[in-house]
Image (tube, rainbow, N blue to C red; front, side, top):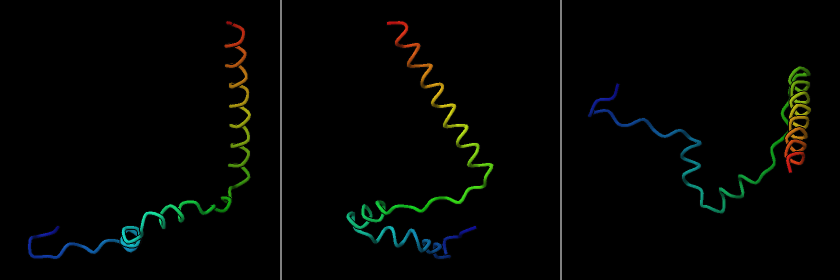
Length: 69
């Protein structure tokens, strides 16, 4: 617990670094590509099932919309 006589805790290093960057430096840093995540076989399979589900549901929505016209 902080009292009035204790100094505030120093900001974390990454926050201090972030605050010292100029706007164009922040934008340039955000446009760097991230590497692929290393996922387990189970997680990759789940993502492919999810992709398939989204495609099927999207096709059903489009079909329903076009059938009602």
